[in-house]
Image 1 (cartoon, rainbow, N blue to C red):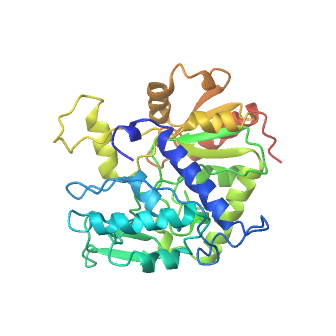
Image 2: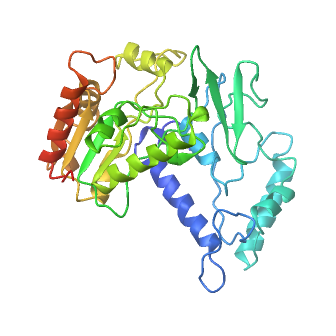
Length: 353
């Protein structure tokens, strides 16, 4: 996983597909039945994939790399000049054992075998030591560490791993709603996107009132239940959502994307963050039921046109620009925003009952 490979928008999704396939294979017992894939100690490793990932330079982490490291059955080893020969012998022994019909044991066994070689940089951190908790609060769910950045009035998710598409596999989607930049993935993935202002409008359309929750750590049980109900209703009506870019939204990201203006930069220029498109083509290819893409604001539409104009997958789709749901867009009233969103959804063939 290197810099040039990550310039290809289909590369990281392909890596995740391979990892998920191997993970599924390793959860099968000898009778072909699935064990509990969430408990990595219940299955033995029958298939191994070796790869290399870059380490942060100048403290700058790479979201795509962190998303790979975050997988429960991925073990990252720290290779140095001092340990590479000894580590090489251990890896050869492991591969030979698997190739001759043996098993590598569970993840806990692998941790024991490679104790002392494991790369223990906390997820999201630019250094091997944990960041100063005086200004940052850290929470873990056993295998993931997410930084919560303290703001003036709220705590924002500072996860560098972007949320994936929000959809229901059982309900063929008809409408894809695209924002501009991505939301950081929270520890509780069922609360993904809960900070988005779009839910104020969708809540009125489906008669499930909901106010966006900026600080997921402080969400109340009634709020979380209400949010999950709104998401479930929205997805069941054939509406899914994602973002044009996988760059996680923050004021810093917004400024970097805005000031970059697609100009060429020098190798030591850290003020510009290049736009990283989500793999929207693959999503459209997979869900042939999609007929309409609705963009939340002109900025998302303009970015999409820059990145995907001329793409064959987009030729048969209706493109629609919705008024921004942000409260900062005060040129039209909330009721008018609701009306325009509802009209666009109805036009796409979604029945609002």
